Image 1 (cartoon, rainbow, N blue to C red):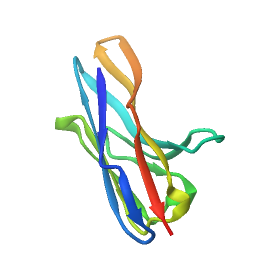
Image 2 (image 1 turned 90 degrees about the horizontal axis):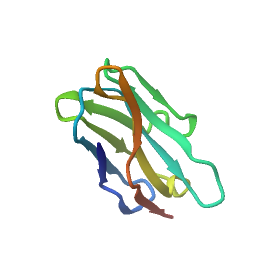
Image 3 (image 1 turned 30 degrees about the vertical axis):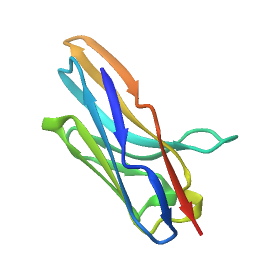
Image 4 (image 1 turned 180 degrees about the vertical axis):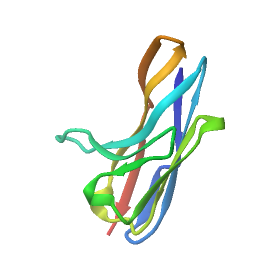
Length: 120
């Protein structure tokens, strides 16, 4: 199973970006998908997550500005980021949690990361 993230880049403060992450490979189902971010010297933190049923959760710093969505048929998760701030600058990683490869076999996977830079 591979996760391919895209959509990062450079944007001015107040702008928007949309990240996408597609899971491919031998996938029976995916329980949850999400986005984390990390800056040098800090721990990776949860940005947003969404279950297969559509339940969402967000980190406190992005609530009201970011929206996570998911296309289960395409095994793809999206992150719409609005009103971006310089402190949102980080490498964003997508994750797929409890991926069922075959019934009874579940694994977690990470994407390669995509850089988001917000200039002031």
